[in-house]
Image (cartoon, rainbow, N blue to C red):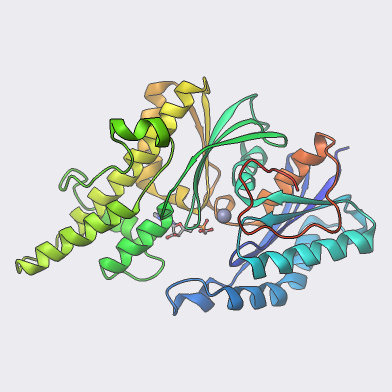
Length: 346
Ligand code: KG4
Ligand code: ZN
């Protein structure tokens, strides 16, 4: 029988604890401090760290109860050691070390962003030999070539400025929508004309191909939206918010999907996993589904509760690492707020 792996996630504002055996998810419990940040219009790291402290033990107990196991049944502890907020990471890693030490079970410090891809093994089964992973959220937008989720991940590109979700949140603020604006912009965009305004596609010019073929940039797009709205207001015209949202969302989805399909072609990959909280975005889902079908690429997107930050993604990656027989992490590991995306395990 595969080992029982406990996964602990605390990189940002979600405290997640899950239990996985092999690729079977036995429990997944998440506590979020998002409500405590909403009034500030962004995550306050100190508030997030304290919330992790409060949530940790109740979340752990709830996960054990859900799986019908006790701590002594756990064979290995996996924890997100980065990238993320230093304070938040520190709470989770310290707790994981304490569990490892107290239970005498190995500790595996794993990469949060790679976990966003790994979780799909719990949903759609073991990965094929090679795949592409597009991880998009409020904090990350990365394109990863995954030859083996536990041992061989190459970062092909990332955003040079805003993450996709972050750009949506900023445009949401511009259009006077509540925080976080992403889902509101998505909803509004569905009522608008995506071809109404030709917003720029960042890093998509021929001159960008040499250095930034698979990198993203959304800050120029965000500025273009702001200028367009300002112009409209200056002329005393009513801002066609739905058309602005739809045209903006189309530009983001177009760039993400175009670059991802090009990367699949170049690296001879026919499976794409999309993870991270922004994979809830309907414009991205529609565009990826339609264009990947045309290109003969199978798209795997986990249900949204496994795309936002959660413990299952860390337990899934921990389980993959354990199944490959990788050596555990040292109990002295630190947290790495900017952990490289090629580092699966520290
Ligand atoms: O993964 P996640 O829950 O948190 C992290 O950033 O780690 O991602 C949340 C981000 C936020 O920026 C949110 O506005 C955005 O994803 N988001 C969306 C949608 N749902 C969430 N953006 C656009 N359309 C959506 N449907
Ligand atoms: Zn995340």
